[in-house]
Length: 205
Image (cartoon, rainbow, N blue to C red; front, side, top):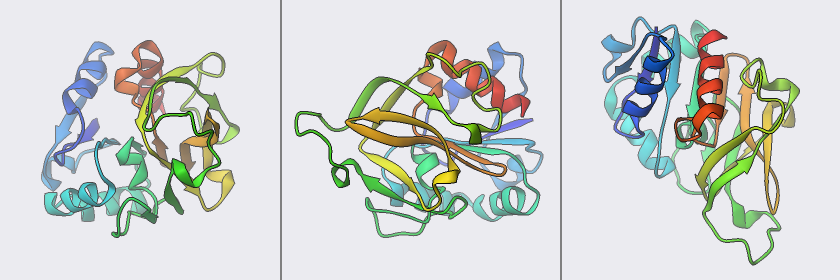
């Protein structure tokens, strides 16, 4: 069973609909009890880093998430802000993240971007999978494009944790992975067949 963590952020219905079309069992989890049988976990999110962490704490699901992901090595994928909160901290806020993949979320202005590039980075962009993807990008090694909407990017403490890169003025990590923990900055639920293939790959890990 794939559980989509519903803590008040992200388009939960879009993920459920995509998995329904694939005939993959999935459900929304709004409480720790509903998360208990999760065999795969999708952690979506939109908005600000601190707000996401606050809502996750309020939901009461964080202790069980920690137990499942860190203790029992259940596969999890964070999406957009759900990826960013996998980090230790963010320049966007003052709170601590989950710290499952060491790193800091930084604003694009910390990179030497050409001045003409608008922020946020919005729209379709090419994604280049790396060897650390662990099967997430199976069949997406060439010509994969995904939909982005963000002004912050994940700066891994260890570059080996990068799972894919994209370029917006300069290259940045658009996917990360350490062990059973994956994160993607783009929105697979808005990325048509590319996103469907990635979510299917996650279900098959």
